[in-house]
Image: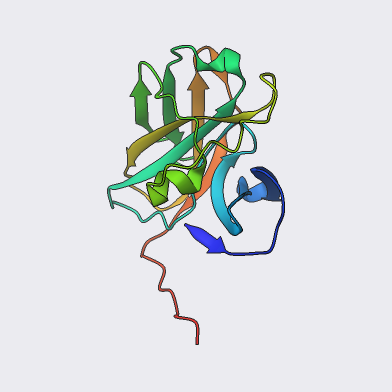
Length: 173
């Protein structure tokens, strides 16, 4: 979800907005156009585009992984979710080999042929390396902790909020 357009001059950049909510922003620009994406996840590691998560509603979410060249090798991705109150656990994803993706987030959505923003970045820098479309459905509302395992590396839990109904957006006037 694009949340705004600003006059920002730089490459892809992630900024932590609210550490308690496990959300951060990714800013991108190309040819004078600027994008800001809100994501749930862990800055410079993994995240998915922030949008309402509604109980018992199956929906595909775009997950993005960041890393170094070393992480490009065929790593597996496993995601489980645990409801802290009920201890109910569900499997979200069990992917044998993550897809490689070296473009910007906006080029994924715009379907444009733009060079990756990481071209001038050294090989040891963190950059977007993978996109995964993952279907998620949660059977209970409330806070869920997403547990992510990339290869044999376990990431800190990502808390998300599952609501009882779709948020209603009010159009700007």
